[in-house]
Image 1 (cartoon, rainbow, N blue to C red):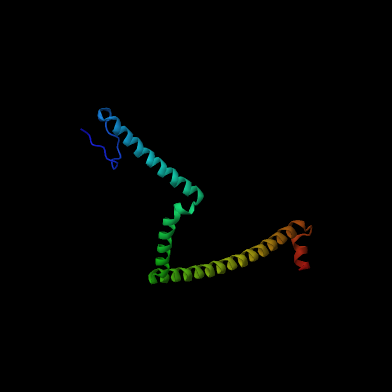
Image 2: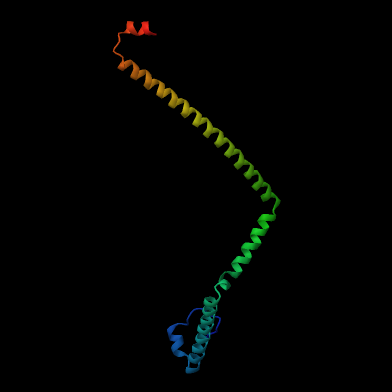
Length: 134
C-alpha cells in the first residue's frame, strides 16, 4: 500500500488514492489547506511590503559590490581604464581640431577656385588685354 507523507511533492496514483480511507482524504485536505493559507499569508505580506521579496537579493548584491570595490586588482584596472579614457578623449579632441582646420582651409581654397572660375568666365576681354591689365 502507498504511504503518503507531507514531504511528497507528487500526487499518489489514482488507484492508491481510491484505496485510502476517509481519514486520509481529510489529512490531505488539511495539509493542502495549510499550504494554501501559508501561500496566502506570504502573498499578503509581499503586497504590504514588496521589499521583503528582494531583501535577500539586495544583501548579496551589496556584499558583491563591496568585495569588488575593495579588490586592489579591480581598483588598479579601473584606474588604468580611466587613464585610457582620458588619453582617448585627448586624441579625439586633437583629431577633431585638425579636421576643423582642414575643413576651413578647404573652404578657403574652394572659394578661391570659385572666384577664379567666375572671373575667367565673366571677362569679355581678350587674353592679350588681360595680360596688359595685370
